Image (cartoon, rainbow over all chains, first blue to last red; front, side, top):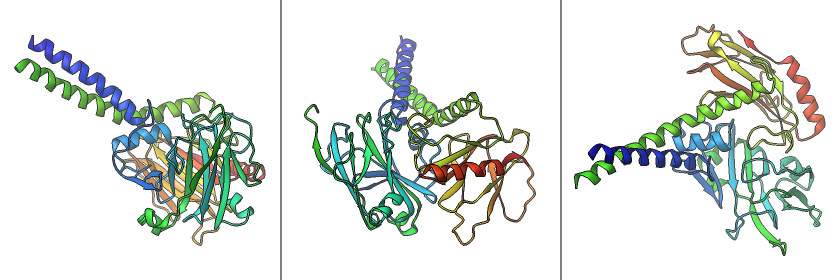
Length: 201
Length: 177
């Protein structure tokens, strides 16, 4: 009786442990963050990404959702999946992203679907970067739209067509040292304003 | 009273053991699957392979950057150290090494605009315990396991820059030291 109870407990515990590990790693769902988290106005990062200092949950989640990510001395990665109102970013809505000077040698913002892949469209509008900002008037004040159809405003455009529920990843290459030391103070995080949503959505 | 306690105790033991065994095994498993996919697609060990320009159709790993030109070399140091030489680039660029557990164990700049840019970045990758002769201008990367990946990133947001980055791959090396 005792052995039976012990085996049942062991089996159920192992089953739940297996499932919770897959969930924490983001094999099922978005994954979990337990430490090292950096959050600047809803843009989330983790300074231990890519390094041996990362805890086992971060290592597993990055292996699944950010394989071959660099350490913070070379690049940092921020991800956001909600707009300024806290609503989930989704293909059926249009958004305007605004930002200022970024504390890095080069930066880009790229749209990914819920599986962490580029959306399956042929719009050739997958990201917005420092090169685009510089050619559109300067890196000190820039904006672009995210929508399923080309922007009518004439500003830059990143296509969310076939993106479903998506997120945006801000990459900062060769980040400034003072930014790494105090990201909440130094980074003027880009805003994400929802312009409107389609009737079907 | 003892019966539920025994069941609860083994439940906790089973949960903790399975959770951490799976969690710690996942990075190595995912990296080995990534290597298998690469070799299965015809990428040779110890040879730089330029990745196609990143598009939704060509992406093979999660979260690729469409603004970068990537080149990859599969490394196996079980037979001895491996030497890599990579030319620098007029914009942002990096040469990085990822070990079998997905850790970024080395990152060197390829940006030719930096004051200490070497012209050609040279590194030697070796397994713990393998002898490596120190040489000026050569970085040494020591691995705990023999499998690794080397990755070149070069800022190349246009087709012209991608083509220029691709032209540097034949003059880059990745092979036994």
